[in-house]
Amino acid sequence: ETGVTQTPRHLVMGMTNKKSLKCEQHLGHNAMYWYKQSAKKPLELMFVYNFKEQTENNSVPSRFSPECPNSSHLFLHLHTLQPEDSALYLCASSHGAGVNSPLHFGNGTRLTVT
Amino acid sequence: AQKITQTQPGMFVQEKEAVTLDCTYDTSDQSYGLFWYKQPSSGEMIFLIYQGSYDEQNATEGRYSLNFQKARKSANLVISASQLGDSAMYFCAMRERNTGGFKTIFGAGTRLFVKA
Image (cartoon, rainbow over all chains, first blue to last red; front, side, top):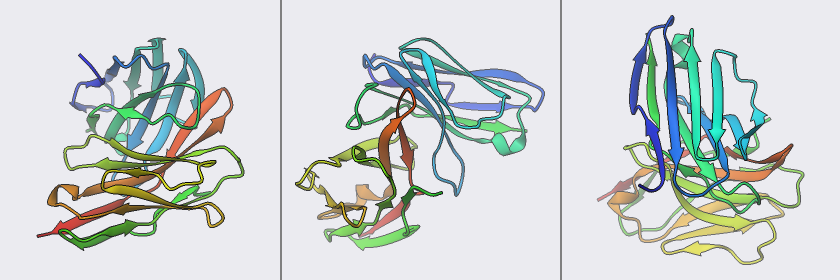
């Protein structure tokens, strides 16, 4: 299996639920990212991990909790979300160093909070 | 402050014609990378082309070229000989160093419609 894989593709959850999004990359990259894509807004960078260490938390509410157990796996744990959190959540990976490293994206998880 | 600006929410182009998608950026760094990504209706983000801040020549990848004007801080994408399959969202992005590593930020995107 190659590339960046995200599961699940679609998720519907209530505001009191707890769920997790999973991302796995088979590209040998050492940096992983979570982005949020809402309608009519630019992609918002949420978290960056380099070599399993979090290097960016872009003022994300604590109801989103990332976890990076190794360089190939990234999770986003969700709890007590709000309807405005409904969006497409994209995971990406890249080589950690250098401005010339493009991002490789997964297909995203379409999250609906009811 | 917005660092990547794409001023064209939507663009139309006739099949087989060329189209230019605009992008301006703002940074105080000397070293940075500029990228364009395509997002079809299926949702996946596809890397198209890269331009480094120190590159003197404009980048080209097949039908895609990047018109890089450093002094104006612009990085426009030119698609030649448009095809129906080019209909998609296009995002301009900039990668720069931040504390502990690097990050990539995106513009709001331009939706391109290719007409038969």
